[in-house]
Length: 173
Image 1 (cartoon, rainbow, N blue to C red):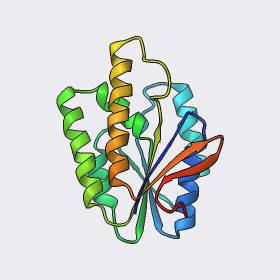
Image 2: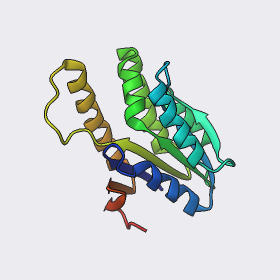
Image 3: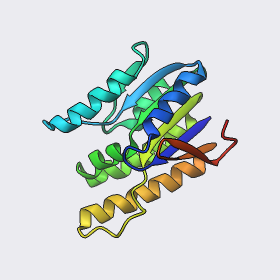
C-alpha cells in the first residue's frame, strides 16, 4: 500500500506518518530529504525528527535521488517513510532543470514498482494566495502537480489539520 499524507506546517502530518509506521509492525526505513546547509533552525527541526524516531529504524538520506532510495529499500515486509516531499522538491528546483525532470519521473516510476508500504509526507502549499515571485509560483505549481500525480497512484491519502488525520482516499484504517 502506498500512502500520501498532506497538511500544513506543524499540522501533525509527520507524527501521523510516524504513528502509521509504528502501528504497521514492519521493518521501517525513514527516508529523509532535508538538507541543513548551515541553517541552524533547519538543523533543530531535523534533530527533533530524529529524536522522535525509534532508534531501530533504518535511515537513508535522499535529498535529490528519492526514486533510487525507494528502489533500494522497498521490500514486501518493509515500510518506507518519506519525509518530506516538499523539501525534496525544493532541493531539485534549486538544482538543475534537467535533473528536476529526471528525478520527478524517477520518483513516480519507483513508486509504481515499489513493493511493500510507502508512506510519503508533504506540505500542502496551494491554499494561499498566488506567490509574488517566479520561483515561489513554480514551487507551488510543481508541488500541486506532484501531489495530484502521487494521490492518483496511492491507495490512501490523508489530510492532517491540528493533529487530526482525515482520510481523503482509501479505507482510513
